[in-house]
Image (cartoon, rainbow, N blue to C red; front, side):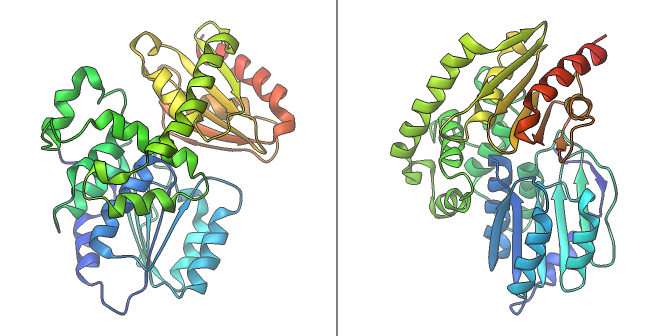
Length: 344
C-alpha cells in the first residue's frame, strides 16, 4: 500500500539520495522504540551513516544533538520517527551547516520544508518503519523481517496473532522463517535492557542476517522476569476509574511501553484508556486508547495543565508525557478530571 504524504515531496527525496557523495558525512537521529530503531536499520542499509544516535523526548535534547552534529562536521542529517516541528530553532541551526531529511508519521503541526530541509510527513497510521521501507526499498531490497518487526510493534491493533496471515502476505515473509511475535517481544525486551544505549540493539539488527542470529536469549530472560512480575502487580494494584486505568510502576528495566501495548491491545480492553506511570525523575508516562474515543495527547495535555516543566506528544491512540516526579498526585488528580470531561 502506498503511504499518503501530507507534507513533502517524494521526488525531492530521491533526488537528494541520488546526489549523496562519498565526501558527505551523514548522520541518522532516530527514536528509541522498535519503530525508530528499525527505521534507522532500514535507512542505514542504503545511506551508510557516519554517526547514529537514538533520542527520546526530553527538555533540551535537540540542542545537544546540534552540538554533536557540529562537532562531527556532519553535512547530511536524517531524522526518523521523531517530532521535530516544535524544535524549529534547533532545525534552523542545523540548516546552517547541513541538509536535513525528516521522515515521520506523528500528527502534523507545521510544515518544515525549506531549501535545506526535506520534510516528509505521512498520516499517523503509517509507522516510520513502513515509510522507510516504502522509500528505501525502491533503491535496494530490504530484509522483510526487520520491516515487520517495526511495524508490528507500532500497529498492534492491525497486526496480531489473530490476523497473522495479513502481516506475512503484506511483507512476503514465509511463515516458517520465524515466529515474528516472539522476535518483536525479544527486541522490545532488548531495548528495555539497553535503555539509553539503544545503539546496541541497532548494532544487533545490523549484523543479523535472520532473527536466529540476534542471540539475545540471556538478555530476554532477565527482562521477561521483570515484565512478568509487573504484569502480576498490574492485576493487583491498578487503579480503575470506569474505563480509565492508571498503573504506577517502578520496574528494573524499561518495560512500561511494552507492558501497556500488550495490555491495551487485548480485545476486551479496546474501549479503555490506559495510563502507565514509571516512577523516575521526571515521571515517564504512557497513554493508550485503542478505539481512539479518547484523544491521548489531548488527555495528557489537560492532565499537565498548571504543572511546570512538562512535555506531551504522540498520536490519538498512543501518547507519552514527562512530568516532574513531585507532581505525581497533582497529575493523577488532573487526569481523572480530564478523563471525565473528555468522556462526557
